[in-house]
Image (tube, rainbow, N blue to C red):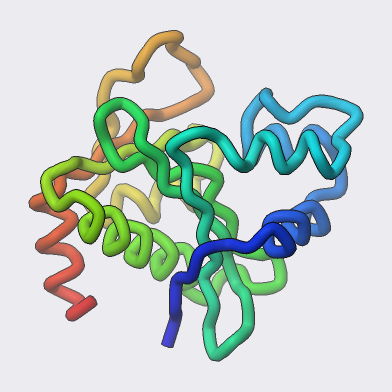
Length: 164
């Protein structure tokens, strides 16, 4: 059974071990991450205003990380990461379910959004399978990204369908 908990500073610092280069960190977390990627700069980028960080655990083993932000007048899912050793086990779906649940507990009327790289076909397929649909991007537009949304009502039905 998976469990979502607020990420500690140690959890966030441990994320660095999952990346082998600044380019990988930027691909995951955005261009705000710059060299040199010191501990303090890394933490500054993770601890943005109106952003909460979470860790998904399965039987006390940390398996994924994600953020829930107040952006675009929506619950915005950001910096989703299933840890490399834990991939292909359904944790991406569990992480999204738990973040949807968390968002609805905070404000059941707000819709959900996320950005995903078009080249990340595994993630695109996951989000589409959960009911997210591509919509117009907030400015500035980027050709390499998709902006996807899920209505609050669809999120509620999705979670109800899996008894989450």
